[in-house]
Structures are given as C-alpha cells and as structure tokens.
Amino acid sequence: MTFAPGQPQDREFDLVVYGATGFVGRLLAAYLAEHAAAGVRLGLAGRSAERLAAVREGLGAAAADWTLIVADSGDPAALAALTGRTRVVATTVGPYAKYGIKLVEACARAGTHYADLSGEVLFVRDSIDRAHELARSTGARIVHATGFDSVPSDLGVLLAHERARADDAGDLTETTLVVVSLKGGVSGGTIDTLRGQVDAARTDAANRRLLADPYALSPDRPAEPDLGKQPDAFVPRFDRRVSGWIAPFVMGPFNTRIVRRSNALQDWSYGRRFCYREVHGFGNTVLSPALAMGAAAMLGSAAVGFSFPPTRAVLDRVLPSPGEGPSEKTRRNGHFHVQVHAATTSGRSYISTVKATGDPGCAATAVMIGESALALAFDGTRLPDRAGVLTPASAVGNVLAERLRAAGFTLSVD
Picture (cartoon, one colour):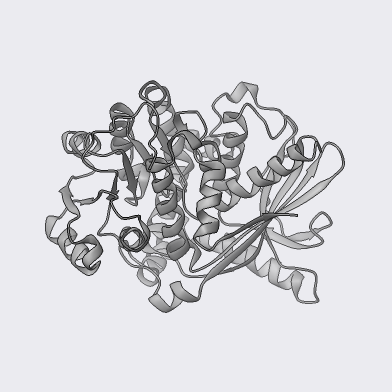
C-alpha cells in the first residue's frame, strides 16, 4: 500500500465511515467490509454507539474488530478528535448544508482527506470559501460529490478530454452528457436535501443568484469565459447534436457546476471554450416527444410542489423519510448509462460512456464513494498533485476510473 504524500502515517485508522447508521452509510460500510483489502484499518462513526454496534454486527466477521466512534456533527471537539485519528473520512451525513461544514473544516485543519455525496451547490460553495485555502496548507483533499452526483459526469468528461489530447485533437468545445437510461429508487436523504435546496432558494435572493450562476463553484469566477451558452437545459426539444429528443436532467444543475470547477482547477485544461450541459435523452421514435415533455413536466411539478406548503405537505407524507431508501430488489435491479458527447476545436468528436448495474443513488453510489475513499487512503503519489476543496476528476481522476472498472463499471471512449 502507498500513502498520500505529506499526510501523517501514524494515524489509528486508514478510513472512517461517518454516518454509518444511515441508509447509504450502511451500504457503504457493507461494501467496504466485502471489498476493502485485508489489513485496512476501518472505523464506523456516528451519533449512537448502540446503533453503530448494530450496524457492525450486521456486517459479519470482516467487520468484527472495527472500532466504533461516537461523534455528533455539531460537536467541533468530537469531530476534531475523530479527524485526528484517521487519514480519510467518508461521510454520508446529509443534508450537508445542515450537518456537513464542521466536519469539512475539521478535516481541513487536521490534514485529513474527505469524501462525501453532496449534491448541494450552496454547501460546496460554502466549503470552498471556508476550507479551500486551509486544506491546501495542510495537504487535505476535500472531495465533494463522489457518488452518482457527480462521478459519472466528471469522469466522463475527463476521459473525453484525455482521449482528445492523446489524439492531438484540440480542446473540448460543445459537450453534452446524455442520460441514456436510468433505473432505481430514491432515498429519504436525497429528498431531504432537495427540500433544503428549495427552501434556501425560496427565502434568500443571494442564494437564488448563486444557484443560477453556471460558474457558481469556480475557484476564480472573473477568469471564467463569458460564452453566453452555459445555461441549464430547461425545455424539452429535438437536439441535432445528440440525434434525439432531450429534456432537463434533474441532477444537471449541480453536476455541470462540478465539471466546470474541474476544468478550472486543472488550469482550464479542457479548453477556454468548453461549454457543458446535461440532459435526459429519449431517443428519436414516435413516442420520444411525449416522453421528453412528460419528464420535463414531472420535474417542474416536483419543484413547484416543494415550493408551496399545501403540496409539500402531501409530498412529505408519500416520499421516503431520512433513513429510508429503495428495497434490496430495487437496488439490485437498478442501473445507469450515460454518454458524454464532446466536440473539439479540431472538428473531431468523441463519445465517452459510463455505466454500471445497481441502483444509481444507493448501490452504485456506495461503490463510487467507497472506491474514492480507498483511493484517497492508499493510492498516494498516483493521485493528481493538488490539495484543497476538489472534485472527483481533479482529486482522484484516472485512479478512480481504474478502480471503478475493476469494480465492474464501464468507462470507455469512442
């Protein structure tokens, strides 16, 4: 095993799962119990020793000697003690805007690497403002969005860029991620995060302006190109570039900002004319227009429904609560398949594919954050040489792509 340079090697743990009693936290712990190499020093952390013990018992012999750590997300002293004992924290405790920033700051101060599943623009912006320079000074890699938000997006674009560079095909220009197919459920934690984002936008004009900014997560906003072409896709229509009908993709407003941050953190290596969007694809059949329009209507109805108290009360009764999630059958039978269509300044074009089996937001996400955390713990000098508040592509990049292929994911470029 190799280790991240500049990080203390005498820590008690290699990796601690924070939020191990939550729905996705349990899935992550189970994944690590089955797939982490022998000798990896793992711990489980959360608010309740009793519940942590129950999780550990359910993981079988592989986890029998894992240490349990009680630490509340609102207790800075407990978080400082936790982060001082481990080289990496993987946290599933959301909504992150409510529960996450103190842990980010504790990791940044301790020089401890960090991975989460955030899909919250406002939280990531707050994390950048509070912790980026501190984490750079201590060598900590703070890596947001290491689940379905936003690993497929970030790695799909990175792979297209690297193939274009290898072919001397120039920079990326018009680039579109298309969701080809998607099947799975939704966790209560994801719903709770959506509620928080809606409330933050509804009650604060500054938040609304930030959420509308395509470069909201840029490390240097004035340096970003003013292309005039970066708005999120809102209207269903036929798109010639992808040869099919498209509609808005619910995760696009977050993922696009992560990908643009990746470009900037890598010195705009994708190109100064890089223009990126994400859409849900519906093909080009007689039913495609109706499917695209129906999907857009459903997405709009959900946003409106969470914005008004009467409809929100109904949604709160029927949607999963925090701690709940898809059934084992739904997780097993789920899948995702996305393609990144990238044009280049030379006129050549590429399509990168990222796909996997398993419910995207839970089963596949547990693999993505698990392998991200293991890469942070053990892949050391193979990782990009940067620290601070990062993205999957800028922090773990090709190392994560290799790990995910070994875990059964498809990541390719044509």
